[in-house]
Each structure stands twice: as structure tokens, then as C-alpha cells.
Length: 83
Image (cartoon, rainbow, N blue to C red; front, side, top):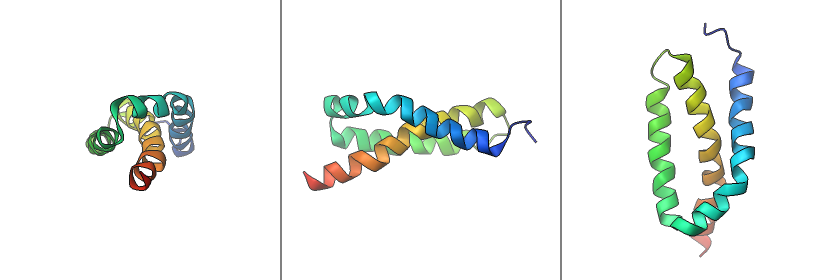
């Protein structure tokens, strides 16, 4: 393996999401919901691409970006649908 526990990688996504959640709302308000949804889709494609390689750094970066995209997933889509 990588010498890294799965639980640590899982928690890394939550921690990066918690840290960036403060800024995500303001960023979405600035760029717009439609562009934020498109950014979410592009970031998810990038994350999936990074996870195809057996390099620990890519996995760590993908989990950190995954925390940000989780914020977008659970806020932007719903508010875009409602408005």
C-alpha cells in the first residue's frame, strides 16, 4: 500500500471541506451558481483523473479537492434549483 490509512484520507476530505466551507458561499455568490455547478463538474472529473494513478500525492490532493466539491454539491445545486 501507500503507507497511509484509508480513514486518514477520508478525514482529510472532511477537514478540507470544513476549512473551505467558510469561503465557498462567498465564492459562489461572486461567480454565480451556474458557474459553480460547472466548476463542480470539472473538479470532479479532475479528481477522478488523479485517482487513476498510484501516486500518494495525487490521492491526497484529490481528497482535499473532494472536500471543496462536497461543499459545492450540498449547497449550490439545491439553491440553484430553488431560485
